Length: 410
Image 1 (tube, rainbow, N blue to C red):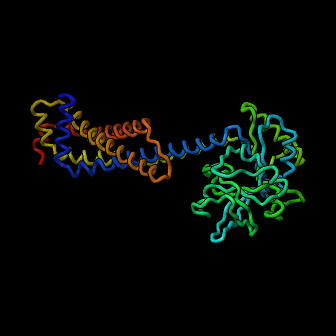
Image 2 (cartoon, helix red, strand yellow):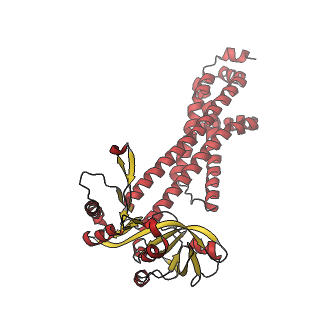
Image 3 (cartoon, rainbow, N blue to C red):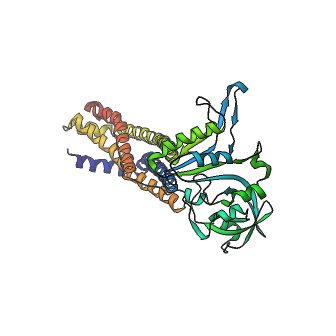
C-alpha cells in the first residue's frame, strides 16, 4: 500500500472522530503557534535593537560613571565620579576623536501653564547633536553662544512636545524647569528610547546654563562639576579600540590610579553594546523557544495517548487486515501516517495562528515582529518529528498484534 492510500485511510479515520482529532491536534497547534509567535517577536525585538544602536553609529564611545568593589571596606562598592575636568583632559590628550560631548542628566519637573510632568533634563554642549546622530523636527539646536552666555533655552524631544503642547507649535513657547523659565528653540525628530539619553522624553539645555541655574549642588562634588557621561565619536572606526585605551590612561592619570587599579568608569563602544544586547536577545529567544517546545512535547504526548486509544478501538480491524494478508510493516506505516497527518495538520494551523499573533503584535505597534522562513521550517520540522516520535510506540503496538487474538477482541 503506497503512502497516498495510507494518507487517505488516515484522513478517513480522523474524520470519523472529528472532535477527538481536533482536541488531539490542539496541543500541536498551541505548541507550534507558541514557537512561531515567540521566536518571531524575539527576532523583531533583536532587529529593532540592532537598528536603533546602529542608527546612533557603531563608532560611538560612551564614558560613564561605574562602580568599583572595595574589599577593604567590608565588601562595599563605591562609585567613581566623572568630572568636567575629565572631559577637558580627554579632549586635549586623546587622538582620533571625531566629536566629543559631555553631559549631565537628572530627572526634573517640567511644567507649562497647564501641565506638569517629569522628564530627563540633559545639560550638554552643541556637539551632542552630531555625536549622537540626532535630527531636528523643527527649530534649531543649542549653540556655543547659548552655552557661553548661559542662555535659558531648551530643545525638547518629540514625546515632550506632544505631551506638553498637544499638537501646538512649541517653538518660542516657554517651559519651566524646576520653576525656571526656558524658551523652546527646537524639537527633536523621533529617535526612540534606546541608547544613552537620546530618547524622545528628554529636554536638552546648555551645560553651563544647567550648572548655573538648574542643577545646583547635586552637580558639584569636591568643588568640581560632575558629569553623568561623556559621548564621543571616533573619526576612523578602525581606531575605536585605540581611543578606548587612550581614554583609560587619561582617566587613570586624572584620578591617580595605577595600571593595576580598578578603573571606576565604564568605557564602551556602541559595537560592544550591540554585541552584548544581541547575546541577551538571542538567549531570550532560545529560552522562549524552549518554553514553547514544552507545549509541543505535551501535544506529542496527547497524540500518543489518542493513538493508543485508536489502536484499542480498531483491534478487530487490524486483525481482519492481517488475516487477509496485511504485513506488520503496512500496519506500522498506517498508524505512523495517521500520527504524521495529525502533526502536519496541527503544524499548519499552528503556523497560521502563530503568524497571526505576531502580526497582531506588530499591528498594535508593540514590536515589529519578523516571521522568517527558518522559524516556519523549525516549527514544521518540530511538529513532524513530534508526530513521528510519539507515533512509533502505538504503531508498533498495532503492528505486533496477533490476528487471531485481534479478531476475538471485544
